[in-house]
Image 1 (spheres, helix red, strand yellow):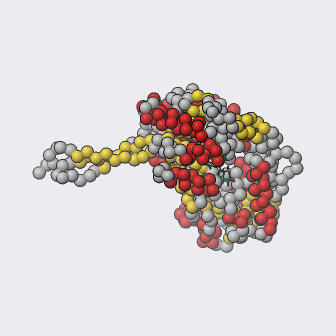
Image 2 (cartoon, helix red, strand yellow; image 1 turned 90 degrees about the vertical axis):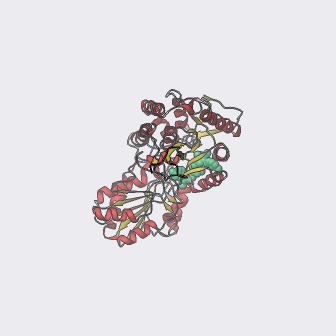
Image 3 (cartoon, rainbow, N blue to C red; image 1 turned 135 degrees about the vertical axis):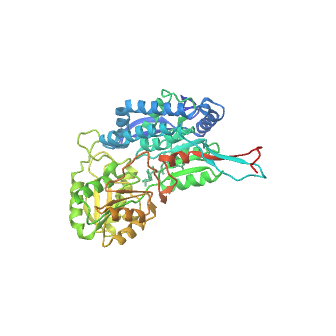
Length: 483
Ligand code: NDP
């Protein structure tokens, strides 16, 4: 059921949708979808909470306390969040406990710290008609923010959008993914307890083409913060163009992991394996193009295949499971189609490639070797546990292959040469480069990409900038200038 105006309300909507367990393929729950009337009511209420309500009058110190309280409540409910995340998405139980939830809690705490520190600048300006001037800037909340999240890590990606927006005093309306909405609803149940007044935060469950489209089309929304596919990102950009509303678009990638001959090959194989198989490969920053220096190609590939063979595919709630199910049947079909394409285009299937018999949306961890960067499996985002290994002959060739992509989100370098590491980091086109470790996420670091990977940055100070408008104030003073 939708949560807005400080209460749970199905409004006039009679439409429902089912949430399916990707492991058993059974229905977990049926939810009421927020229709256009509920979207309109949520936006209007959020607007008045900002313009005339308690939320608009809440100062930074109070917002910081609420965000810290919310982080505490999430921490207390970690087990419930983690269980729902595994149920909803099919990811193995240790992942939400080790990655998603700690990230969520850190993100709320980090932005709680910013809430009363969003300062302006004082800028020296020349005199105006012989009178001195005093100029300064202030940062004001951008307004009503629509946050639209994908199904792969909805709690963590939701926190990246919600925490900075609430810290600066925006009102947030979250549209969670239809396949994995449960933790977003749990979050809504904690927001009031954390002290946020009605209208500061709303959750509108529903389908993208219904609830999502109504939200991005609503003229009362000042900013859309979106994570998902480039196709939907384009629709968001088009909708936002009406009124030139703000957007942050995080649209996935085809990220290279470059393994140089001087790398610690065991450490690299483990890290590269995590980079492609974590969260079943359903990660925007998945290191899905694995570029390996030819002199160590055979040895590295053997180690990486060993890592893939050690992956334990299974029920997320079984002890020892290290990879769970994909999100839905459509995603299995999509990933299987890419595996067929890899075979057809001549890459060598080194391991995996099949859907195990029985219930559940499982696909084996899969690696293709001796691939080229022109193959479809090296160019398109698969969003599944499929790595494409490409040999290279020189440092510059590795950089050229890495940059020959429609995407530019992340890159990982594996080398023991510090000069090479920083030199290549400068040349690689990506929003984030990691050296000797895959995707070391941190709310202090800006996150986002360019080209098909999107527009703008979330997190860090960039997350504050992305949710504020900078205003300049210039006073012309009636104070005589010294002769
Ligand atoms: P989408 O882009 O379709 O979905 C992302 C979010 O946008 C969901 O909440 C979705 O709702 C919503 N949405 C869909 N259509 C609209 C619309 N017209 N207006 C407003 N909101 C809309 O991604 P998918 O979930 O379908 O995944 C498809 C592919 O996208 C993946 O295979 C992957 O390549 C990429 N992807 C990238 C992610 C990343 O982290 N960068 C994350 C997820 C996907 P609903 O869930 O109801 O469809």
